[in-house]
Length: 229
Image 1 (cartoon, rainbow, N blue to C red):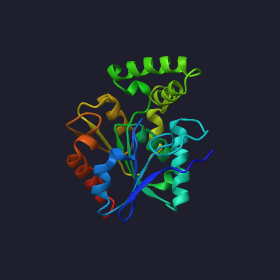
Image 2: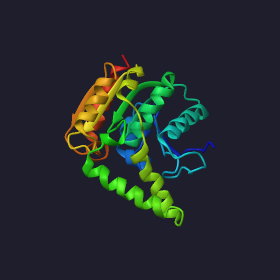
Image 3: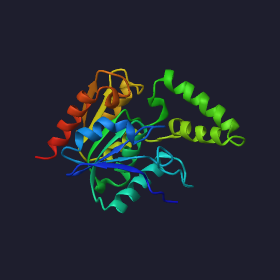
């Protein structure tokens, strides 16, 4: 079942779509919306079941989120856009770029991962245990069920192989924090697997866009401007 995704829109110019991470909403990108709307039409989307977007009845998976983005773009009459995805939003952007390559101009992957083992064990193990506990109580509690779904995104999704990324031909920027929860070797593997992609590591943790917006925005702007010439 399709849902109408809530979206914060601002600015004028070529479309730039922002996809937030797990358990968040479009408000995560407040600094990016303000910055990029000076020269872009920015669409900051609330993912299905996040923020002000309804959950609906479709599967709660990264794959479904990619199809939701396709429906959103068709509904808004956006044939092609640059896409910036953070964390699970980056994973959604990856799946979307593989599934609908004709609709992606330039791709920015911030703190994305291909599979759960790409996340550092110190972060992933508590998530796995939380998911198991929430799943156990899911039949008796709607709150536990919703929590299990959210944690399940980080346990079961995405499920990609490095070899699949060779199909991505659009200009791509892979950007992460120096203390990111994604293993550095995993970020590097994504960069190497996507032909001619750029790699930038900024000082900071997983949430560099929100905590270090000036440095993050400058890096992304430079990358976007490369496609304007």
